[in-house]
Amino acid sequence: MTHSSYSIDNYRPFSILGLHVVEVSTSLRSIQKDPNVSPKDLTVRVTADTNAEACAKDGLKLGIHKLVRVSPKTNASETSVVCGAFRAIFGAVALDSGMVDSAGKAFQHVVHGRRWKLVSPTSDGWMTAI
Image 1 (cartoon, rainbow, N blue to C red):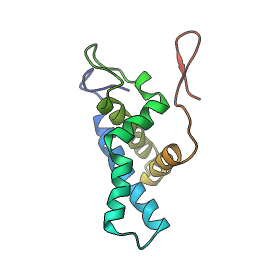
Image 2 (cartoon, rainbow, N blue to C red):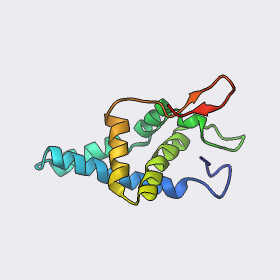
Image 3 (cartoon, rainbow, N blue to C red):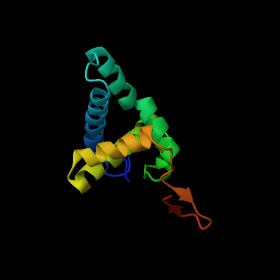
Image 4 (cartoon, helix red, strand yellow):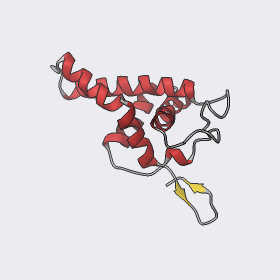
């Protein structure tokens, strides 16, 4: 995954799509659980799932910072870098599957389901999905 500090060909468009996937998914999930949810409560729930700090926290737990290519002057663990990469995953899922719903389900599983790591270092220095 490539950050904009590294190359003009980067994950930013996927990150934007991923943000909207998360917003829609959280809204849908909240309304399904409580059809009478107030606009204020809905906004609070969406904000909780889309704010940069929570997004980066979830991304760090997955190990995304280990996968992002950044320029030597950029810290791959910065909130904006990790959050952008985290959101980009769900944008890529939506694009690959052709369905926003698939990406939303993936997000809900990662954030609200069981915790898992995206990568694990191997003895030879490579990363393996687990």
